[in-house]
Image (cartoon, rainbow, N blue to C red; front, side, top):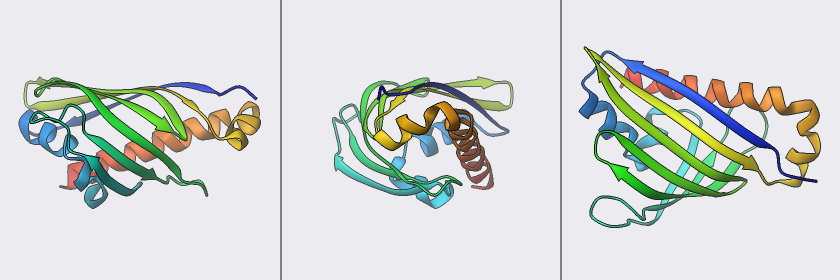
Length: 150
Protein backbone atom coordinates (compact mmCIF):
# COMPACT_ATOMS: atom_id res chain seq x y z
CA UNK A 1 0.00 0.00 0.00
CA UNK A 2 1.36 3.43 -0.92
CA UNK A 3 2.19 6.02 1.69
CA UNK A 4 -0.35 8.76 2.35
CA UNK A 5 0.82 12.33 1.80
CA UNK A 6 -0.05 15.17 4.14
CA UNK A 7 0.51 18.90 3.81
CA UNK A 8 -0.15 20.39 7.23
CA UNK A 9 0.01 24.07 8.12
CA UNK A 10 -0.40 25.56 11.58
CA UNK A 11 0.07 29.18 12.62
CA UNK A 12 0.81 30.18 16.20
CA UNK A 13 0.50 33.80 17.37
CA UNK A 14 1.88 35.04 20.67
CA UNK A 15 1.89 38.46 22.33
CA UNK A 16 5.60 38.04 22.96
CA UNK A 17 8.98 39.07 21.58
CA UNK A 18 10.02 37.00 18.58
CA UNK A 19 13.42 36.13 20.03
CA UNK A 20 11.83 34.45 23.08
CA UNK A 21 9.41 32.44 20.93
CA UNK A 22 12.18 31.47 18.51
CA UNK A 23 14.39 30.34 21.39
CA UNK A 24 11.64 28.11 22.82
CA UNK A 25 10.63 26.56 19.50
CA UNK A 26 14.28 25.94 18.56
CA UNK A 27 15.07 24.16 21.85
CA UNK A 28 13.60 20.73 21.08
CA UNK A 29 15.02 19.01 24.14
CA UNK A 30 12.67 21.16 26.23
CA UNK A 31 9.53 20.58 24.11
CA UNK A 32 8.16 17.90 26.47
CA UNK A 33 8.14 20.52 29.26
CA UNK A 34 5.48 22.62 27.51
CA UNK A 35 4.16 20.52 24.61
CA UNK A 36 1.99 17.71 26.01
CA UNK A 37 2.14 15.55 22.87
CA UNK A 38 5.97 15.56 22.71
CA UNK A 39 6.51 12.41 24.73
CA UNK A 40 10.25 11.93 24.25
CA UNK A 41 12.99 13.89 22.48
CA UNK A 42 16.54 12.52 22.52
CA UNK A 43 19.49 14.23 20.90
CA UNK A 44 21.54 11.80 18.81
CA UNK A 45 23.88 14.44 17.34
CA UNK A 46 24.23 18.11 18.31
CA UNK A 47 25.15 19.29 14.80
CA UNK A 48 27.32 22.33 14.19
CA UNK A 49 27.54 25.50 16.32
CA UNK A 50 24.36 26.87 14.70
CA UNK A 51 22.46 23.60 15.10
CA UNK A 52 22.56 22.46 11.48
CA UNK A 53 22.96 18.70 11.47
CA UNK A 54 21.29 18.28 14.85
CA UNK A 55 19.67 14.86 14.84
CA UNK A 56 16.87 14.00 17.24
CA UNK A 57 14.92 10.89 18.02
CA UNK A 58 11.31 11.99 18.58
CA UNK A 59 8.23 10.30 19.95
CA UNK A 60 4.81 11.98 19.79
CA UNK A 61 1.34 10.94 20.84
CA UNK A 62 -1.77 12.99 20.29
CA UNK A 63 -5.29 12.05 21.28
CA UNK A 64 -5.33 8.78 19.31
CA UNK A 65 -3.96 5.50 20.72
CA UNK A 66 -0.74 5.35 18.73
CA UNK A 67 2.70 6.94 18.90
CA UNK A 68 4.70 8.37 16.04
CA UNK A 69 8.44 7.74 16.16
CA UNK A 70 10.83 9.45 13.82
CA UNK A 71 14.22 11.08 13.52
CA UNK A 72 14.41 14.80 12.83
CA UNK A 73 17.54 16.19 11.15
CA UNK A 74 17.96 19.97 11.06
CA UNK A 75 19.02 20.89 7.52
CA UNK A 76 18.69 24.67 7.37
CA UNK A 77 18.58 27.58 9.81
CA UNK A 78 18.19 31.30 9.18
CA UNK A 79 18.45 32.73 12.67
CA UNK A 80 15.16 34.03 14.09
CA UNK A 81 13.49 33.60 10.69
CA UNK A 82 13.45 30.01 9.42
CA UNK A 83 14.25 26.44 10.42
CA UNK A 84 13.93 23.35 8.25
CA UNK A 85 14.34 19.69 9.01
CA UNK A 86 13.96 16.31 7.40
CA UNK A 87 12.06 13.52 9.14
CA UNK A 88 12.39 9.77 8.68
CA UNK A 89 10.58 6.97 10.47
CA UNK A 90 6.81 6.72 10.92
CA UNK A 91 6.72 10.01 9.02
CA UNK A 92 9.01 10.89 6.12
CA UNK A 93 9.38 14.32 4.58
CA UNK A 94 10.16 17.91 5.49
CA UNK A 95 9.10 20.24 8.27
CA UNK A 96 9.60 24.00 8.25
CA UNK A 97 9.05 26.80 10.77
CA UNK A 98 8.92 30.41 9.64
CA UNK A 99 9.13 33.15 12.25
CA UNK A 100 7.98 36.76 11.97
CA UNK A 101 7.18 39.69 14.24
CA UNK A 102 3.94 41.54 13.43
CA UNK A 103 3.86 44.51 15.76
CA UNK A 104 3.66 43.08 19.28
CA UNK A 105 2.83 39.59 17.99
CA UNK A 106 5.33 36.82 17.29
CA UNK A 107 4.10 34.53 14.50
CA UNK A 108 5.28 30.96 13.93
CA UNK A 109 4.12 29.19 10.77
CA UNK A 110 4.64 25.42 10.84
CA UNK A 111 4.56 23.57 7.53
CA UNK A 112 4.81 19.81 7.24
CA UNK A 113 5.02 17.97 3.94
CA UNK A 114 5.16 14.38 5.08
CA UNK A 115 3.95 10.94 4.23
CA UNK A 116 3.09 8.12 6.58
CA UNK A 117 5.17 4.96 6.41
CA UNK A 118 3.54 2.43 8.80
CA UNK A 119 1.60 -0.13 6.79
CA UNK A 120 -1.40 -0.01 9.13
CA UNK A 121 -1.72 3.78 8.76
CA UNK A 122 -1.59 3.56 4.98
CA UNK A 123 -4.14 0.72 4.88
CA UNK A 124 -6.56 2.73 7.04
CA UNK A 125 -5.86 6.12 5.44
CA UNK A 126 -8.85 6.12 3.07
CA UNK A 127 -11.10 6.05 6.13
CA UNK A 128 -8.95 7.79 8.74
CA UNK A 129 -7.17 10.55 6.78
CA UNK A 130 -9.46 13.27 8.23
CA UNK A 131 -9.02 11.85 11.76
CA UNK A 132 -5.22 11.87 11.41
CA UNK A 133 -5.37 15.50 10.23
CA UNK A 134 -7.57 16.46 13.20
CA UNK A 135 -5.22 14.66 15.58
CA UNK A 136 -2.30 16.66 14.16
CA UNK A 137 -4.26 19.92 14.46
CA UNK A 138 -5.10 19.17 18.10
CA UNK A 139 -1.47 18.29 18.90
CA UNK A 140 -0.35 21.58 17.36
CA UNK A 141 -3.04 23.50 19.25
CA UNK A 142 -1.89 21.94 22.52
CA UNK A 143 1.71 22.89 21.67
CA UNK A 144 0.74 26.50 21.05
CA UNK A 145 -1.24 26.63 24.26
CA UNK A 146 1.63 25.08 26.20
CA UNK A 147 4.14 27.57 24.84
CA UNK A 148 1.78 30.48 25.57
CA UNK A 149 1.56 29.37 29.21
CA UNK A 150 5.37 29.34 29.32
